[in-house]
Length: 499
Image 1 (cartoon, rainbow, N blue to C red):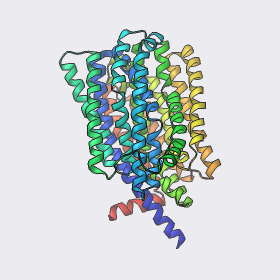
Image 2: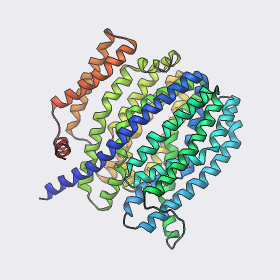
Image 3: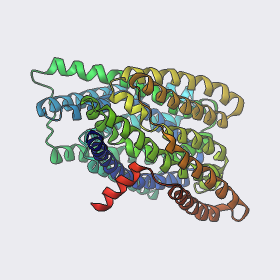
Image 4: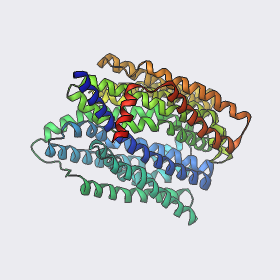
């Protein structure tokens, strides 16, 4: 009876996570498609050099958004599920998060505005970068509040609203305003100004939707202020430092490429990075509702179920990521050619990113597992140590190998941090996401890679991509099916079919 109950609870948790993953996956597929269109419009409309300036500026402002939130979004992911029965306290925490994000974004936006000339002089040394940074700094508070509102919907397990805002409305607005700017004859500055205007509009919609579709009424008054603020910031501040470290190891590469190389190289590197982000779709999908589910299971002491969910989600993540990684690695030149002939030179960069991302997916939600089991200080240390390592490796390898050295450094650090996370989860909680079942997707991946590589002898260019990608994906899943589904997989799919 206990085993049966445990299996039932595990399937229930997997249903919650997979429902969120399905919503996220559909939304993110749309978002990635919209983002693909947006960057295709930008690369074709601006060219590699101007696009490189845009990419460099948006990377800098993404770091500013991380700093401005002070980890407020991650705190809400932890505490909104934990205090599901205490509405006044949840309202206070959300109000504190909004106040923190607003004040932080205004201060950091002002600093970025004033520092823009110095940043340009130290990196690309282009006056256009100064103007772009200043425009984006004015829109920083709105961008920050959009991100925070999305995290609130995620913490409430209302992913349909997060998908609507983050994956549909925001990118569609960006495409619309950019196309209008380009059709009116504007170049880089007009495009960036239109994107800033789009962020203001989306922010207003996001906050309105929060009030209309949830019972949350944020405030920062009441008798729980001292206790709530202490709990909130003791969790959020380490995660802020963790997020800064995360940007250091994941995006310091493009900052250093801009420091050592030309803006056109920044543009090529950014396109390869964006394409490699498609590989993380399965992981990001399952990560949407894994944190609140893991938080509840851990708080309730249901460790056995937590282990089962952790193992199954990690295996599913890797299985879905492998065919995407094969397309990015085997057909890298063909993918980059879509953005223009000058971008195809980033094929090796894209291949290295694909290796790093498949390692990222192979460890599943281990980073969130550490955060949801109250090891946020450990995740902060991880990110800062590895962020520092990434800076050192990028400096050494960029000076020796150029843009390929930057990709090699970042892919290596991404792989290393994920190995460390799995070891830390095992050491702190005694849990591991792995089982013998992993030989099946691994074997299918090796056989599919051989087949897809062989198609180079028959086709090339866009024809190779159009034929090889879908056929390779179908072959992969056919092999996995022939090798046999696991018990958890069969039970889950049987339940989905019966419903």
